Length: 123
Ligand code: AMP
Image 1 (cartoon, rainbow, N blue to C red):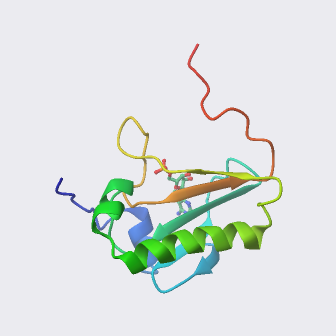
Image 2 (tube, rainbow, N blue to C red; image 1 turned 45 degrees about the vertical axis):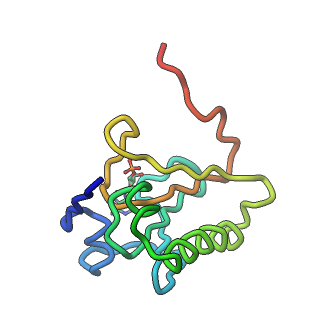
């Protein structure tokens, strides 16, 4: 599938330094920062620095080094924030049904309270 990356998305602007972020951890290929509208006491977003639209794009076209760095950064963030003991949830949204708002691949790391069941069914 051909992916089209929108360079005006908000995470691309963060990566270009055009808008600020609260960085948790930065590596050569990956940036982790606090979500601006946290849904839990810990809510961190981890993004690759490369221009990937979503999970499928990243998995298909990122280098092995980018993929390894991304996942190791996620694990280091969990370690740094001390969430491994009580646990956490890692979520990625993709496309319209996934309700993805920002078209740059990102993993949400949520923790700090019991998060309940994964999905609440509509009434
Ligand atoms: P998603 O719906 O999975 O695309 O999630 C996008 C996330 O980006 C949401 O949780 C937003 O609160 C978050 N977000 C949007 N703009 C910013 C920003 N400038 N800094 C940090 N997080 C942001």
